[in-house]
Image (cartoon, rainbow, N blue to C red):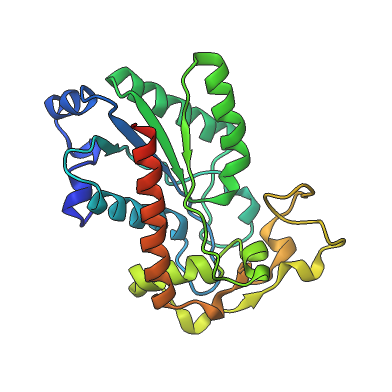
Length: 255
């Protein structure tokens, strides 16, 4: 939490009086970050997803005006990462445990008086659960939660955009730019998971035809994509763009 702008919006750093004041603002919104601890190939730290979340939150906090009522809840750092079982450094909880943690966090934030909750998820493995859970919460409570989407860049080639889903060019570039001391770019590799897929329409995520997979099924190193094409220059550009998109989404939720 080195960013002073982020500390000012971080709920655990506030006193009870400050929390009441924050929640009492018109259209006050809280971001609930959800990351992961899991292998990210031989070149990136196991905290990659959670680190990316903190990087984006820092950028958001520095972009917002002081009077904009956007706050940050404690992160859920360990999440549903069972697809990375078998690699050292992976921590995980059962999907039901993650769902209970999210439900509990949202209920408490609403009890404090915050009008809106937006989830910033930076681990793709959480998305199937989140999509169904947010719908269930909506049906059960009437509360509408928002799922923020930092879209990946379009400059990557089509193969990387489709199959660079883990430790590839995008994630590696972000970390090379923002936390190079945690990275080992000389160990970066390329693992093309589509080489083992049968049929042109089968994809690992976000496609009409998907399949159950584990990281071991698709990549011996854990990398999924081409990390050798990553650079700090790209990462700096893509971080700024993602922050701008997220700030735009947050502001649209408060209008």
